[in-house]
Length: 459
Ligand SMILES: Cc1cc2nc3c(=O)[nH]c(=O)nc-3n(C[C@H](O)[C@H](O)[C@H](O)COP(=O)(O)OP(=O)(O)OC[C@H]3O[C@@H](n4cnc5c(N)ncnc54)[C@H](O)[C@@H]3O)c2cc1C
Ligand SMILES: Cc1cc2nc3c(=O)[nH]c(=O)nc-3n(C[C@H](O)[C@H](O)[C@H](O)COP(=O)(O)O)c2cc1C
Image (cartoon, rainbow, N blue to C red; front, side, top):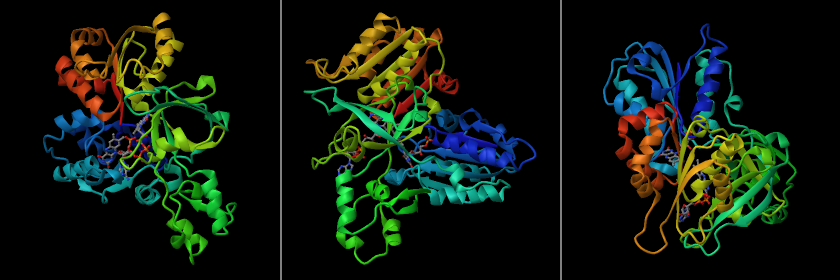
């Protein structure tokens, strides 16, 4: 059995690819299962168990496995006959909690006397070829026939920046930008509401050319880099530009080896592919020293209209539309991005029966996509809209308080089968969850999570 616990789809994808690679060799089909739906008995029956998981929050399990943590991991079952291994996805920028949940799960399985087949493999970010090579080698020892290329996500594709518009001039909050991109390859116009765009920040082209000229380097040479063949010009575009003293006197191979790639940045897609373009809602991050965040700075300022933006689509099944029934959409700030994609989908399918609860700072500047909201209200997509603004005089009020105030109505929507989607910042999402637990109870929210009726895209 390959079990997965995934928030934004990466672990789920690798779990399936690993199982498929093993199924080729195994006499029986390898079963793939969401960890959150398993009991200790299921684990005990697995025989050989591979777990692919990510870590969220601060060292916690992805949403779908949180009830598993509370209910199954609170005890130590006897899993003596089970042989297991864990692939743990994480990000070293989370430092002390790097791969925290995966490591905890690995220890828990060992404490239940399951046999660890090999040490936990910890993966740092989406493009950790070293860790994924280790995993693919271990899969092959179990009888699979795979390699790291098959398990890594594909290369980012070239998209062009088509439009950039500041949505909230004069806002008391950070700048929010509407960004529209068109793909060079129309086949890329293929995603579902809830999916994510991974953007690979880059240096300004002029800075790259200047660097190449200064060091007399041929930008057209190809190198194998991050699992793909790329031109030196493009590799350098996606890395911190080295100081002169880091470059002088070393071979080109060494230079390429030493380059420090920028990490990808994720953005919830705010549109559907039918329009021929992808739209994002991006908050420009400004650091204490006044410099801009790498990804948001590149999208909202560094890139040029008509210029290339490297982008990889990431399916995010955990935030796909749960069902066509009634739906409560809750979010704040740039969380409107993910909610908008779902409302566009519902409008397209004429589903109606949706309720938007959204919070921002000022009604005068921060009601993004007001025209869309008006249109969704007029065509019946939105049965109800509640907005809350924290900076309109009087005591500050936020969206989680709106949820609390609307508790009775939320309960009745859930009783008639409504799904709940939450999109936006972690703090907002934590407050909303606390409010939902108070309204519905923890068991009901667990049940909604297991049934795929409570889904979050939070960051
Ligand atoms: C699933 C998902 C969906 C997302 N969707 C959206 C979305 O729709 N819209 C959106 O705007 N964002 C979204 N994000 C967040 C986005 O991915 C980025 O995290 C965000 O844009 C900031 O990245 P950045 O590269 O601009 O800033 P970074 O360079 O990563 O900096 C971010 C912050 O870190 C701090 N920081 C970093 N380096 C320093 C330093 N040297 N000194 C001081 N402070 C520092 C600063 O506070 C800075 O503002 C999403 C994230 C996830 C995981
Ligand atoms: C809001 C948020 C919190 C995260 N917290 C952690 C963490 O505490 N430790 C860690 O190693 N990784 C953390 N990560 C990184 C994820 O584990 C990593 O991106 C992983 O590849 C996601 O896999 P998934 O798509 O299967 O959920 C976090 C990511 C996000 C967006």
